Amino acid sequence: MDLLLHLRYFRTVAEEQHFGRAAERLRMAQPSLSQRIQRLERELGVRLLDRSSRGTTLTPAGRLVLAEAEHLLAAADRLSATVARVHSGRAGTLRAAVPPRLGGAAVGALLIAFRERSPGGDLDLRELSTAEQTAELAAGTLDAGIVRHPCPAPGLAFGPVLHQPLGVLLAATDPLAALPEVPTAALTGRDLVLFPRTEAPALHDETLTACARHGCTPGTVHEATGPDFTRGLVLSGGAIALEPHAPSEPGTVWRPLRGTPVTWRTSAAWPSGRDGPAVRLFAETAHETLRDHAGMLTAPSARIVHPRPASEFPL
Image 1 (tube, rainbow, N blue to C red):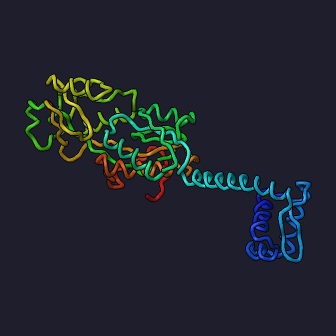
Image 2: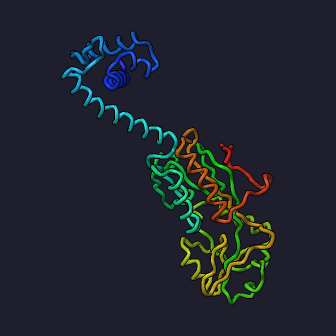
Image 3: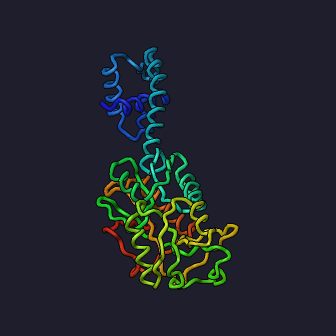
């Protein structure tokens, strides 16, 4: 017997104090309703209603059962509402990550947008490298992330890829700082500051390959994990850094590379087959946030190379 359903029938009869009116309200036949109430009484072992030609009244036991039924049915309604929010991706905790150097504005916008779209949900967001994210996605300790491509990790699905053009961070006194755009070949022989290769080995190699393809062979490649050390190396006058566009700070300037020869490809990622509503909501929010707040672009399809077959959905 479906106890909750039968309690709802009982509550309706108690409210109407009449089987006919209750049956009409429930859109069912009166004999069927009477049989269901009788079954509930047999199940509970008490008489709930006194029936007469004038109507129906609660027995003392019926009044006690009705009071408890109200609490039980209210709790069931709350549970159903919670489950509905979970199924829609608007409740529960989503464990997600973003890569370093995504930019404070983009991270802040992502948190705000997800909170607005999922008012009952919680986003547990961390900063992890692409290598760290792929390991945690595979281990199940991360539900979704934003990764840099190439991302040669089996078992992952990806959202639409966006391109983030790189420019060069220079000391303000550098002669190249006077140019509105810097030719890539003009950086040949200069010491180059780049993120550690362990963070995203494939992307690290791809970035250097793209530089070489456009005429730039750096002198020495320095690895820097944070913006302060990067800026310190650049301020020393002995190095330049390849980075996405960022506000200039005293002593340094950022200039785009002529022709946009080097870009970082970025997308949402999640374990294949585990793209539930909350994951899809995060992926959609991430795509829009990166496009609108991180200066990322949808490149021509010929330039987009997926590392593995991607599971894309309309945004």
